[in-house]
Image (tube, rainbow, N blue to C red; front, side, top):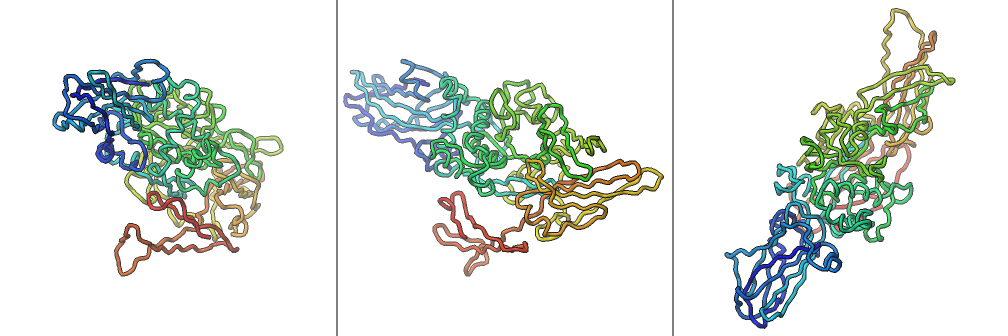
Length: 599
C-alpha cells in the first residue's frame, strides 16, 4: 500500500537529511492521542493533518531544482507491487509558508477520513539535481477519528467522545434486574503494550491471512473492523473451564498483553462481561466509539421462532429439556458508526457481541446490528438483527410436566429484555443509563435496597394467590430452589418444601451462592382438578462489600502527591458462618505497574 506525492525545495550539492522530527507533543495534542505518549510510533487520527519536520544538512537551497519526496506505506506492498500503489488517492502533503525554515522545513501530511486503520511506514527522500538522494524513515499509527465530521465514526457530542473513546475506566453491570451489581473495569487502552496488541489482533486475523491486500483495503470501514474484532476477541480469550476465573480479571490490559506475549495463544478463561470489556478496549483503541451494554433476561433463541420454552416438574424443579435458554444477564457492546451499506436511518449505535452463540457469515461473531433496526423489528436487515431482536424481545412459554403429560402452561411476553443499560456518561460511580426497558426509555429504576437478599441473612419471600372462581379450593404448594450460573440452566435442587411456606435458612444456600443465582419456583396445585400454576423468580444475593478509606495525615481534604506513598484502610466483614480466605488485589491504570496482591 503506497502513496507518492512531491514537494519542491531548494538544493545544494551536499544536501542530505540529518534526522526527522515527528513533532510528538504537538501531534498528540492536536489529534487527541496524548494517552499514547509512551508508544514507540506516533499515533494520529485520520482526516486531519500531522506535522513532520526534516532537519537538513547543507547550505540554503534553491526550491526550483530540489525535490523532497514522501512515500506512505501500509503493509509490504512496496516490495510486492513494483511501483506506486495508491489505496486512497486523496492523501496529500503540503508546506505552511509561514513556518518556512530552509534548514528544517515542516511538512504536513494529510490522510483522508476514509484511510485504512493500521501501522504505517513513511519514507522521506531529498533528491538533488545531479541525482543524489538522501532518505529517512519513520512510522506512525493511524486510527479512526470521531472528531472529524467526514469520518464514518463521527459522533457529534464531546462528552460522549470523552466517555466512549478516551475514558479508560468503566462499570460492567451484572446480577439481576432487581439487584444490579456494578463491577469496576479498567479498559487500559493507554497502558503499555495494549495498542500493539490491538493492532496485532488485526494482523493475525483470518481475513488478513487469507488476503492481505483486501484486508488493508477494508480496514477503512468500521463495519468490517467491528466484525473482525468480534470474531477475534472470542479467539483471544477462549471460554474454557480452566485457568483464571473470570471474576479475577479487573481490566483488559492483562488479557491483551498475555495474549500478545504468548504468541497469540488463547487466554483462559472469560465469560461474556470479560469478552465485552476487552472488545470495548480494542474498539476504543482503534478510534471507534464503544460502550458496554447489559441486557437483563437475555434470550438465546436457537431455532429462530422468537419463543423460549421453559420446562418444570410438577413440584417446581426446572428441567433441562431444551437448547433455548435465558441468561439472567448478557453483556455485549455497542459501537457508533455510519451504515452506508444499509438504507438511510440505520446510523448510530450498533450491537456487537464478542460472545457469539451462533455463526454469522460462517464465523462465530455477531453484528453490527443497528439498534434502530432492532427497535423497529427490521429482521430483514443484516448483520444478525433477527438474533439480537430475539435476545431482547422473545416470548417465554412455561410448561409444567408430570408423568409425561402437560399439567400447566403459561406465556410471558414481558420478561425477556426487561432492562437494557450502560454506564451513564460522565458518572464515575454506580450509575447506569437505561437504554430501554421493553423499549420504553427511562422506565427502569434501581430496586429498593430493603428488598434485596443479603448474604448471611435468611431469604424471605411471599406468595400471593388469587382465586378467580367463586368456589372454595384446597391447594397444595410446592417450593423449589436451585442454584444456577447466569448463562446456564439450574443445577440440582438445594432446597425444597411442600405444603407450607418457609424461609430459606442461611445454611441451605451459603455453600451454593458464590457468583451463582437462585432460581426459586412455586407450584400451586388444585387438589380437585389437578391443575397446576407456576411462578418463578431468579435472583442474586448481594455479596459482602469492601470498604475502602484513603488515609491522610494532617489534612481534611482529598490530596494525594505524585510519586509519594499513600495509605488506604480496607475493611471486610465476613457474613458467613464459616471462616473465609482470599487475596486482595489492587490495580490502577496509570498508577501502578501491574497488580499488587495481599493475602
